Length: 289
Image (cartoon, rainbow, N blue to C red; front, side, top):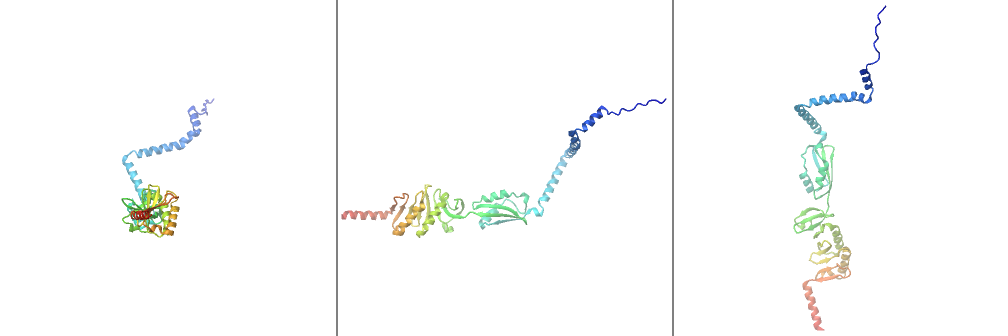
């Protein structure tokens, strides 16, 4: 009779059963597949970077690699080209340009350069871009001077918006521009140009326009005569003066001013000598009567 050999129990142990069930859990499988490698890599990296010397060497290697990439010929800017600007504005732009060329295009902040250029008084608008071949191009739209604004301290060149774009030492330097004066004159320079354009057919030499009380204009002739214009309708009032002048050469007479501030009642102001002559003639007329 043969001895009975006990068979091994085919059922898994409790621990094995739990491990098998755990392996079937999606979260646990993701943790084993992805989380464990990440932890191992993080541990290795942390161990490597635990040394300050190794960290310093790694930073230097990255900086050197970045420098090698940024200074490649295709990324270098070698020349600044200023287009659409006068010689003086070009000189101003090159003087304030904050970078030394050649420089890497990664180091140039184009928006900052554009804002810096547009802060120049003579520049209305600027566009900055890098052209193929390593050329930094600044396309400039300059402000157009339309008048000279005379103050106590200077003779300023202004544009149609009243922006001061330069200073001249003498009227003869910009004899092509009309002169305006007074507080608030730059803000109303467009209206001043309309008045001067309307006065052109009179054929008289004009000294300029003076803004009075920041409300209205006085047209000043070269001999000192003034035409006092109203707050509104200045061009129309001047046209009435032109009609009177054309009919009677009014502005050629010995007048100090023509007051058109009240449209229904134009007033003529005589010079002192003319006033004395008028009084003399009046007294003689009264004595004769």
